Length: 321
Image (cartoon, rainbow, N blue to C red; front, side):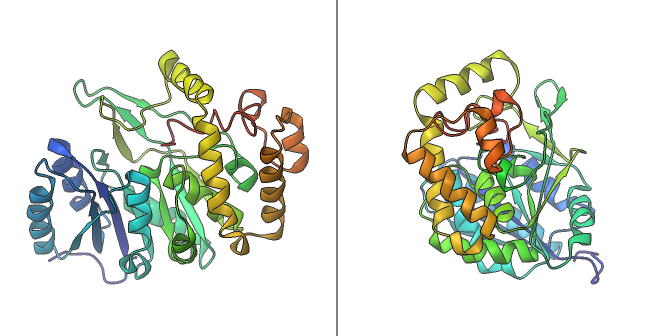
């Protein structure tokens, strides 16, 4: 059985899997080696056929011997973001103090959950979301690079045009999770689940925390759905995506998901969302200063010039968008 102090905060880990391969077990093992043990782990598998389910069954038995409850469920089979939304709506996620999101192929450093609990604890009963930097890690060479920081302020004005952290680093407190579970049933689709979490929590007046100290090894390999935002190649990929209308489509999804939950937003956030949506419908490419005047954070001309017409071209490709 786990030797976790009964007074320690209870944490649930939500993991989405699909064709996870050999990289899955090291990540699962890193969850068991946390200094603050998770009370439960919920894994939604999206129809894997490569042996992932067998690995999950073996892991569930191992974790159970350590007193950690593992639940494996079937995913909706509509992609990673839909799979995470599916997980965020689960009842297990409402019965703990903190909820952490996990990707299937990273490695968590042993104090990841303890650090998250310590950072979130002072924020009490108000909704709060934590994201951190990460180590971009080449498992073949062992080399790692610190992920790029995203300048603040990290608020709803900023969230409309850019994510702030990778979903694989994100942790919600109980109040934040309660807000998310009110919102999830109303959402048909989102651009990316982590960006939507940032928008929802900040738009509802919650606290956004950005930790500078990385606590995960973010595995870099050809199978990354979205890799690190580093170098000329990543800049070219973002530019091509903007030309193809990808970012505009993402903003369409984000606006629809936020409008469906407009009653959960603050008055100021709702008004800003309405202006943002109205300007996009009118095809207005607003200059950088206009968003700032309306309260949408401009992180310099390079970020804000993409905000309405072209979509959020700096919408954190590294940050899992």
